[in-house]
Image (cartoon, rainbow, N blue to C red; front, side):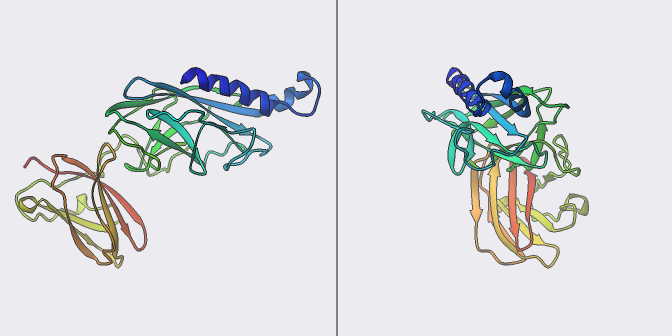
Length: 279
């Protein structure tokens, strides 16, 4: 799989570096203007994929599909990491000029539970060192991979809207900070103290142990529209739609003690990490 990607990378370079001029010497300024970033992905079953992301300083490529700049997956594998462009799978993506505010979506395909790793292999033609992060949209975390690989435990499923490559992170986000988690163990309907409520006081969350139920209430004028409960591997455990109320509850009968809540209100989407104590 990795050898096939390298072959495509050579083809990609030959394509984007070739212009109507007759010699490589004439093309040299254009060659040096293309910035390349390479990643190595290792699946839980040990399969390896190399991915490439190319930035064109003159914006001859875009974030969409560009003929000659994007290399599609020749043979889709069930254990793989690809770029997603217009809902299709690619191993090489060419985009416009480098912009550290942009993010690019991965499609992670997996049929084995276990640890998956994304590693920064190399960068080329950047004048300065760039920061490279993996953004996990489920956990809302940014993990920098310049010096060490990103490792995540995943289930046997496909993840097509969870992982992104990013080049900056919000100032308020700390990929190593777990202070936003809620510890809601107990026997009864427990009211969480103010320090455990979301930073702006948007939500109040309590747990009814005997009923395996989370109670959630909005602390402002916003109405709760939708709740989805995930485990840390990204599997959906429960989901409740069309709530349209300031108070609601959701059943969470699971052996998983560490959960992620995605709570959509009529003003925003809130992500909370919840730790339920031993039952």
